[in-house]
Amino acid sequence: MARPPVRERTSAVWTLPNIISTVRLAGVPLFLWLVIGPEADVWALVVLMVAGFSDWLDGYLARRLNQMSKLGEILDPVADRLYILAAVIGLLYRDIIPWWVAVILPLRDVFLWGLVPFLRTRGYSALPVHYLGKTATAALLYAFPLLFLGDGDGAVATLAQVFGWAFAIWGIGLYWWAGLLYAWQVRKLLADRDRRAPRLADG
Image 1 (cartoon, rainbow, N blue to C red):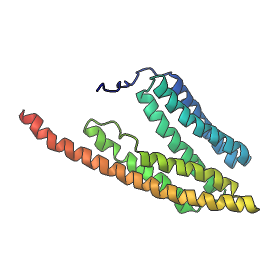
Image 2 (image 1 turned 180 degrees about the vertical axis):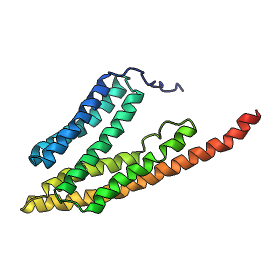
Image 3 (image 1 turned 90 degrees about the vertical axis):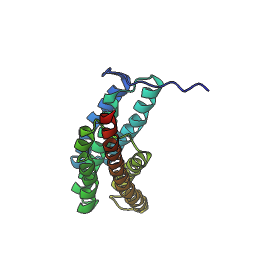
């Protein structure tokens, strides 16, 4: 049976997927300003929706055009985390979420960043993206627009608040669960590398 073709990463920087990711990154300060400045929630949600669509689009184009790159693998998760951070700052500023929610989400990323030096000492640059982490990010990016819509009066706002908190609770739980799985992967990679090192030296 023939093996599927292996997709190699390109060294090019200004590929179409990377340009889309860069534009998505540029939308982060715009989103935050719309939320805490004029409080233009509708336009802020439009920016968030466009960012979500572009997240899918750059991945699709990278695979379709065979333009996957190391830079793209960095830009994509960085953009997701910056949008989450911007939304958390905006929600806290508007008193929509309690302070502990604003602390616990960035704390998970700080925890993971602390694992990167251990990976680099063993020759690894980063862990592969886990489906659970992407699911958690998706849940949070559903939660934030609903929480913004819930910051008002009426039946629609109440319904948005209920669903928003439902997505937020699941998203926070999955976000940390994915973080612990990443930590377990790091531990396993380091342990496996240490076990193989003496054998390679003896050979």
